[in-house]
Image (tube, rainbow, N blue to C red; front, top):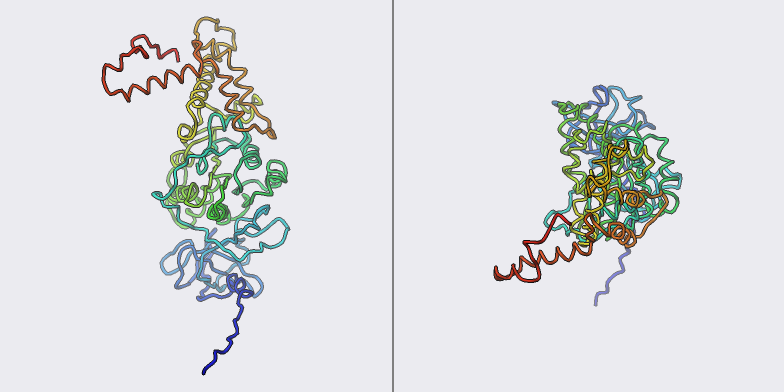
Length: 488
């Protein structure tokens, strides 16, 4: 009778990470033929766009680069580092794989560079799990609908521009009006389980200020910060946005509700403009090549809802000279689910957050809020619109009370409205309290109609559609002939 022999089980786990990270395992070798501007030309066969290559300057000095295009028989490479030292004849090694980022729970509280490497002095990322930077967006047919509110603790957003879990929205503003401060406040106060913040093309001085002042120690504990400052090569700035998005996708795949913030989309587009023009793309509007407007929706569509979790994404867009029709701003506005416009005029009045409510919109506001909330928010918007319409006359003393009842109503409300909208950087207001306060302020609309009265009329009007007989529409409950809709 035969007996089975005990076959020893070999444990290869200690070698897996070494093999995954072994850039030396290259399948193709070529050489540099030309260096012009940001582009390195090399003779290299069997590589594809997006593949990582290593340029060997010396045995101890290797520069990582990426295949960004082809020119006749040559490969066009763009380095992740400086060009100094690269010369014709340097050997080029193809790795056979694209750039990937290490992910895991250990990323929380860490600060990474544009390639996903730690720069906070806390040691290496201890994880064997790696994610590709270029993932496909979730299937649009399989995406769950957005039905839940994401509370952020900022009254102007919770009350008037409510965010849904999985929504994508843009902050449109010029420089120096409080974008970074608002982002830090959202990261600290939102009920999202994880925050991923990508600082793309920002000034180096601002990074530490954002981490220590705007984000704070408590905010950093549940956040991952990706930094690619303005002095880095354009490819690093591009990859920083992809690294941040890939990390957010990882946490979403784990079933988390993630808040992803990217500052700024404009500098991401500028980085792609540098890459596109260097590789020979034709310039279009304001010098942006066509690839910019192809990459923006591809990047932004990766966030949102999936069957596992959600990524609520906030992208900042730098609006030059207040031009909302600038190409990047116009493209982003068409892709995103809403826009928050920050006003320099409000900032000059020390009105923070300086959100211009009447020029901002959340496209999911009506889908995720109750009718009383929506009506109160609409009345507040009308107060601001009526007041702004007559502000010049009011300031010079030319407006006489009684001339226009709606402007009189706005004058009575404007001080309480502004008190509601202005909020301290470290001030948190629960969502329910924000809504009750909003409804209390707008308790009476112009003409003396309350929000509750409006809702009772709205309910009566909606019942008309369910009437089976035309004669029912003229019953005693609702006199359409004498109903004054302007009152509401």
